[in-house]
Image 1 (cartoon, helix red, strand yellow):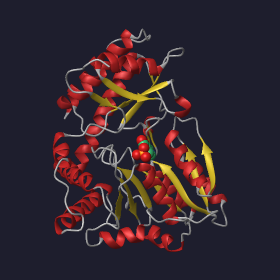
Image 2 (cartoon, protein in one colour; image 1 turned 135 degrees about the horizontal axis):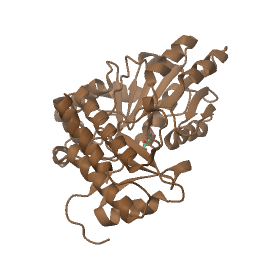
Image 3 (cartoon, protein in one colour; image 1 turned 60 degrees about the vertical axis):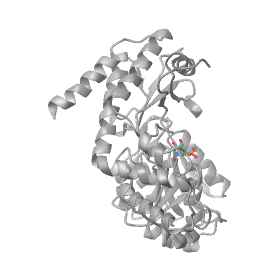
Image 4 (tube, helix red, strand yellow; image 1 turned 60 degrees about the horizontal axis):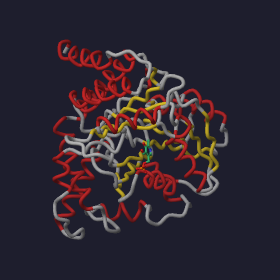
Length: 392
Ligand SMILES: Cc1ncc(COP(=O)(O)O)c(C=O)c1O
């Protein structure tokens, strides 16, 4: 590829742009992970994560990708042959389902058309029918990164409560954490699965679980094999700021800085910023005359927007052209929707002018690729952004 001057535009829905402050923190000299400076670092980070996840319970952090944190949630709470309820909301829900199958769980995997989230009424019906309480866990991806659809966790919690069922609730918040409002404790989530490379503005390499009291109870009798992922060893060491094995020390330096940045901005402002950029993006997509994959406005994602290509046009060729001409990468379609959609990431370290640049690159790309569309998406988005200053 030819030399490209200026900053690369990383507009996939994770990994996201890493702020300079975080990059500098990552580059500190590595310290002894058994010394007092490390204990201060990890205790600050673990407390900060509790605030971000909105929980007073424990949070554990693994040197892993998000997939590791998915596995940790299962192996710590379930036993071979346990039944779980999952929903095929997209590519990532399907990957989590395959992990459950690999561990010998019996999965009721409810299909969807990938254009809407988990329907609370189906959760309620399935649980009400499960008279013998065989379902040990309901597992939901909060924000489906492959489709730009956000399932409504509070409504799912209410559905579980209406059914009067003792199931655990496990939620993947990988592409919503620190981007879309998420409340582990208030929403009665038992295990939350997260990772570093999205709203937390870090490179990949950290996976995390937030754990409820009920999940800790379930862990006492869970018989799936585990060693690296075992919460018990981690929780015992974490109490005094240490890890049972070598942690990703420099990523924790970065995480401390990222948490400080999120606290300086204020979590509610972080969420409002994401909502506003998502709405501006949708205004652009509509002005282009293109269709948003998510069909329920109540489930629009604030961290990414998935856009459908006009019939007969291929998304990957468009994204290749945009990368070559404008040094910007956007998310390709994954799994079932490969080639039919592209995804605009608008999460993490991001602002109005970065969004303007992203949409401008797309608008020029659509034009150069000969895609049938109407110009004016960038203008519509800018007008919306400007209007929000006037209205409030
Ligand atoms: C919603 C969701 N869950 C899980 C994962 C898997 O995480 P990782 O690729 O870090 O293992 C991803 C990755 O993008 C994701 O978006």
